[in-house]
Structure formats: structure tokens, C-alpha cells
Length: 236
Image 1: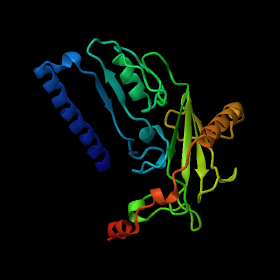
Image 2: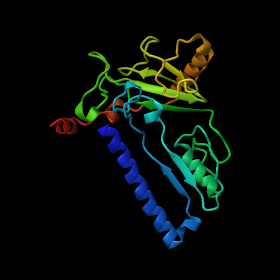
Image 3: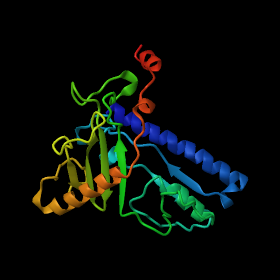
Image 4: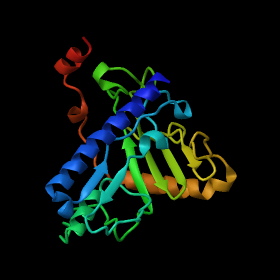
């Protein structure tokens, strides 16, 4: 209860700080030609789905982040895009400004398009990976570092699984597949991966997620490891 009260106190503080920005824009007249975007880093669990106060799962409580865009001319008034990615912010902002997006941009224009699915990952999945790297704590087990877990959301469905363990692709058993229909289970705390009525969705979404991963590039392990001196200093 104390942690939850602190969490909502932080939300209240943030609201107050945003209000100061809005007041300043109104007072200076800048609100007439300013596009406002509110987003954030990931959330954190407050006891949902048995996850304590962590953030290492794809439950909506920690997976979803706000994305609110307001324009002076009200072009987006009442517009709701549904699924979207932070990759879409750049493309959408340039569109609102009438500037073409570079071909290298992977995002879509949320004023004109809707995403069918979004992908995300947590962790590096190396032998040296830890759930809490600054404290060198948190392994999958005695022989395996903290895994990389990846997710795909499509419509009402969420599917996630381990996709890298000790630098290798997991076996089918090691994937530890999770699937949920959020229309039937909004709390996302029931694993429906083996329910017969969802066999087609599980198979198709697993294939899409694996294809997305196959097209991704890996970061060299040395780049993601905490330097030895800093690691030792953080443990003191």
C-alpha cells in the first residue's frame, strides 16, 4: 500500500510539472504554434500478476506507456490510434509539420495509419546478463544468465517468450511461451498458450515474432556489459 501511494504521488507530481509547462505556453502565447507530446519510459508493477514491484514482464501495467499528442489546430482531437510504438513519434511529428520522413525511419504516421502489431524485448540474454546488472544479481538459474524475452501484441492478443539464453537461441521448451487474450483476461495473468481455441493465433504470432528477431542485429556482448571497475564500485 505504501509503494502504491508513492507511485500515485509521483504521478500527481508529474501532472503538476506538466501543468507548469502548459501555463507557461499560454502566458507567452507559444501555445498557438506548439505541438505537445507526452510519453514516458516503461511503467512498473504495483503487485499486478504476482509481479511484486518489478518491471521484467510484459504485463500491461509495465508494458504500456502514455503517448498523447496535442496540436494547436486540434487536428488530432478525439483521434485514437490504438497500438503504436515510440518509433512512430518521429514520423508523426514530421507529418504534422509537413516535412517528409527519411526512408530510414521505421515509424508510421499515426495521423493516417494504424499498426497491426508491435514488438518489444527485455534483456540481452547473454551468459553475463543479470536482471539487476548494477548489483550483479538475477540469473535464470545456476548455469544461465538472465534471458532475453520478446513480445508481440496484435489486436487483443499478447504473446511473449524467451528468445535468447547465454547468447544462444532457446530450445522450444526453454522459450516458456506465454499467450493471453486481453479481451477475456484484461489483467493478463492467465496463460492461454495451450488452449486449443487459440492454436492458430499462437502459431502465427510465434512465427511473426521469430521472423522479426531474425531480421534484428545483435549488439556485441562487450558493449552491453557493465565495465568491471564500475560494476565493483556499484556493489560497494
